[in-house]
Length: 329
Image 1 (cartoon, rainbow, N blue to C red):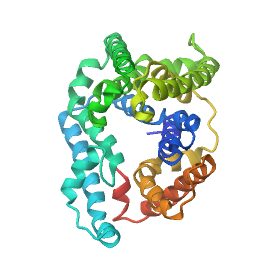
Image 2 (image 1 turned 135 degrees about the vertical axis):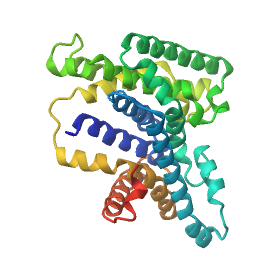
Image 3 (image 1 turned 60 degrees about the vertical axis):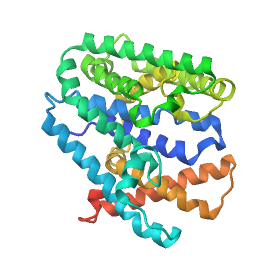
Image 4 (image 1 turned 120 degrees about the horizontal axis):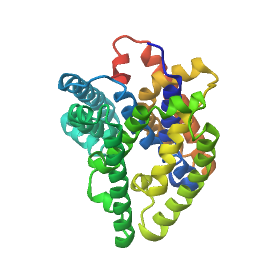
């Protein structure tokens, strides 16, 4: 089966965005919020790919869940030795697995795997209900969009992000919207129409909208975080209206690109994106020893170094038979 280079490119962009979220962080809020598309894009990628399958049964979902659990457990077991040597304490890998999914502990970013397992539990039913029913999916996506707006409004009025009361891996209204939006894009045939030039929304329109919405959503996140939520973490803005529109339009734009350069590099990076995602927080943690400072320049150096080092590490791991399973599902 021929690789979808547009999906590969989307994975690369989303992966770089995730590293940006964690590497740049709040050293520069403009760059930080410009990376907030990353997590939503990963959900849309998964929804897009899953709804191109003819059927998804409980057996498939069960195997995928087991692969996620195996990955989470293996990495937490690997942490036992370095934690003993550096922190002089013994950790329980099972406890750490639970903490990882709850966005805590050393592998706090594994909450994403927890959310994917929740989706996989529901996926056979979701796939059966929505497969071939584009209109129904569109209605549900619209309802989830409105619900997300309601969450934003309630947080705005409470002057506190109400999302914080729900662990990130259980914020199903948020990642459910993006997942089904990705599925809707696949079902509608929009990408094929844009590439063929038969769509009423040509590529240059989505490109222009992506830039405009990036600016608008960036300003909105800064305002809400500083004056309304009194919390500036990007995770509380994934269900904000302008952010949702920006992420969806950006995803459509990336998928509708016709001429993708550096195809080999894109394919290789995409194949290593899971490894980069897993490894980069460990690289950033190690970089703290260097004490590069807290300014924007230092943050950009950490960001670039984390991408390069994580990519090299993932590449080397992919060449070792008994190790490559740690960066693949």
